[in-house]
Length: 169
Image (cartoon, rainbow, N blue to C red):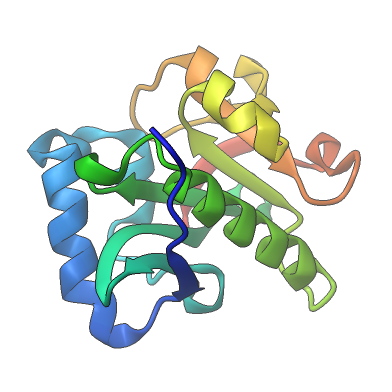
């Protein structure tokens, strides 16, 4: 498949229902049982760090960042990142990821959290700067495969300051 060129734009409040429907379609009802979902549940995501991919006026994907507490420090959780199945493998997810991570890096200068965490596939997320979190560095509120618990330092070396339980903000 070849890459398509959607418009990547900030999420707006009026996108919420469409994003909810897309996310439910992609991840299904099982996503509510995941540790990442638990940390995001009931916590407003960071609108200035959340984006949609739009093609022909239709939202075809989205990415959100949400603050949470990691021990005594505030961190960002990336997710969900979702792209409609018919557009997978065409660069949409990559475009959303690069935009979200670059904006999160810019936000650090304004006092934003200096690290992003997610639960996902290292092979996919490594090009965006993610690496595994050592199992003893984070305690998630629900089970997750430790091989899939990843971090992206927005400031070099900052991960050393993060340790402890992951809790809702």
